[in-house]
Image (tube, rainbow, N blue to C red; front, side, top):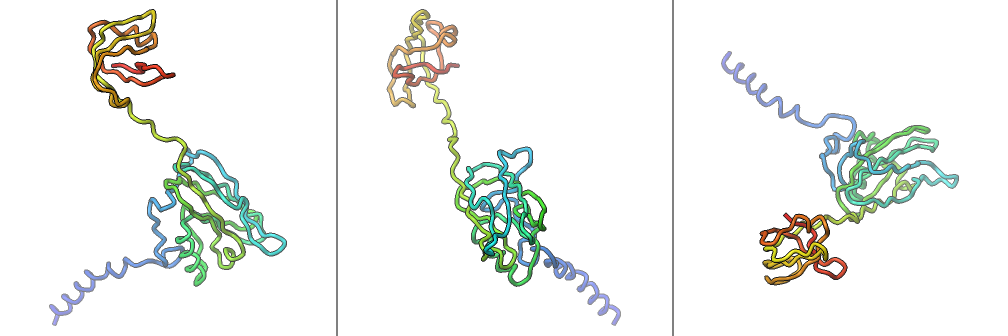
Amino acid sequence: MNKLLLSTALSLLITAPAFAAGTHGGGHGDDGHGDMHKEMAIGMPGKAEAVDRTIDVTMLETDDGEMIFEPAAFDIKEGETIRFAVTNKGEIEHEFVIDTMEGNAEHKEAMAKMDMEHDDPNSVRLDSGMEGEVIWTFANEGTFEFACLIPGHYESGMHGPITVAQSDEAPEAPAVYSTGKIKKVDAKGKKVTIIHGPLENLDMPSMTMVFKADETLIANMKEGQNIEFVADRVKGKLTVTAMK
């Protein structure tokens, strides 16, 4: 009999952690959003020291009963880290949440069943007259949304688009070096004759050609020297732009 009781007790101890692993009440733990992934489709939490610019956001109600954000839309470049400085100038509590439109719709539906306060880095909830901020890095291009998901506020106008466009700064193409041997150096004319292999970046075969070069490069060139160099067209002239 004692052995049976001991066996039952051990069985209960082993299985107990499985029951303790469930979500707890409060916040977004109940709808699976309490433990937010480090990176979402819209990006990830940003660092204060990496902020590229600040956007001031105001939440308020209008005289005709609408609830609005000012500005009503955001245009952001992919890779930008934005500080949203949010102020509630309304008479009642509001929140500022950024996410995909699908993500906001899911949160809104969950909040309609039970009003839960967000505790995520992509949101801030403010009483009347209060200020707060959200710092966010927009890692992916696309169309996203900011909104207030307190029941009834979204329907009263508190949402708008976030357009994240590809950055204007295209990555620099790596320099393409070619091999060659210097046949002649004309320091005065800033020219060098090179017996070279294929110039892949210019789609040119092996041959002997005259190139322009600046004074700094010419000073490091000697007849008979084997070199690796970058050639490009500068103002219509074939030019050595780098050498090693």
